[in-house]
Image (cartoon, rainbow, N blue to C red; front, side, top):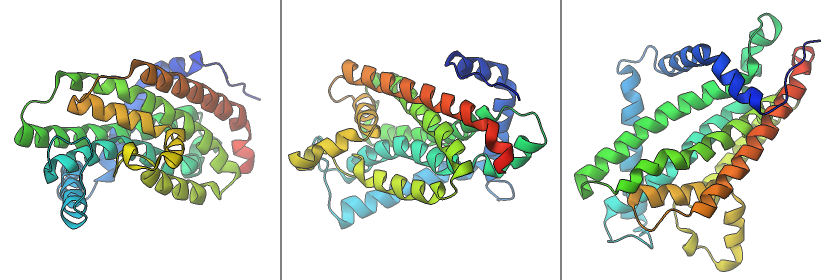
Length: 273
């Protein structure tokens, strides 16, 4: 029986060894999503633009919501703050929702072809990262139009996103393997990601939550990433280095454990499928 390395260094080694395959697979993933449509990849630009307009209307016009730390009552500013949180959440939710079906959707790779199955979560994450970059361009364009040049701290945005990518990859490996053995995982994950949408500080600030329940918010690993993303995007306050280091430590632990779990359990994929 083929042996698979469980050590963390294999994560980097696999990425480097299969970099060309990962790159081409991400391109195919992105282009395949819009194949046959008239506008093609341009939908990846119009979708976040449309959603930004919808969230602006619903939360600032209908609900008349206001962000506690906002510098004004501007509806556009509220929408920008909300959209910044959604960019982070969407990457995580898109990959996690797909994760339980990654192996099930590629059974031919398990049974017939010698294929590095461990790269499937990276491909899913790469596709989500592409759409995140488009959403960020929409956010940046709106910010330039309504508020002018953003703070220089915006260059730290990728630094905040690295723990998000690692956390998402680690969870994806774990769920991709679990989804092979327990088919109910797909339904459970859908419920959890929906709950996280409202248990993350996306539509409201943590300060708006009663103190007795704020600890629930801090149990969510997305909370510090969303909060720090807003800090660097809007330039309000300074980056919490200790909190960011905590995010890095937690995400590194999860990605290593998730990868080890996937490598350990992948031996039984062919038997189950």
